[in-house]
Length: 214
View (cartoon, rainbow, N blue to C red):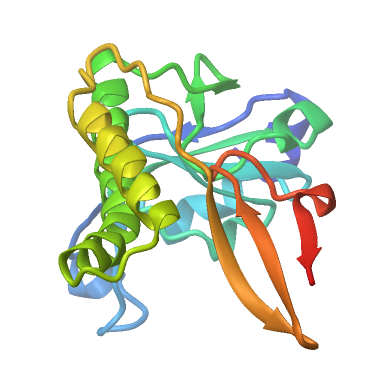
């Protein structure tokens, strides 16, 4: 099949499961080169000419998750992956390699996570939130231990410790996250103190959140 014939017949290739292999010595151009072969026996270098020049090429893994998107098939190295081509359309270009897109039934679709994948994501978020809370709690607790904490610091410590406990209790199979406390970060600026409201990681800091203390 030539690339031109492939284009006219709109037969978009989907070559699956490339793995490393060692070709026969007489079949190699470069002795030290690495080689890949698909599950149906196609050599990666040999089958690249079958792809049309004007299509998108993607690699995807065993979970159908898209791992690379390009028009230049020669730029791919699909070890442990499959390679498919798609029409170069706006709909297909909306995909990215964030792990949130899959190639299913010949189409690019948003990824639907399994319950176990969602649980692992929640576990990762839980660990991150606990680390963030601990970073706030540690200096406040040290100030209390040394007897130099202000009333505000003591109150903040109580709030953040309670938040940390609530996060630790979250059931990651059905997470219900507690609200993250607000805190203040201070820095000098031309003789003034600037109080910056530190919002949650999911909320951008707005200019209205800045105020100058004289």
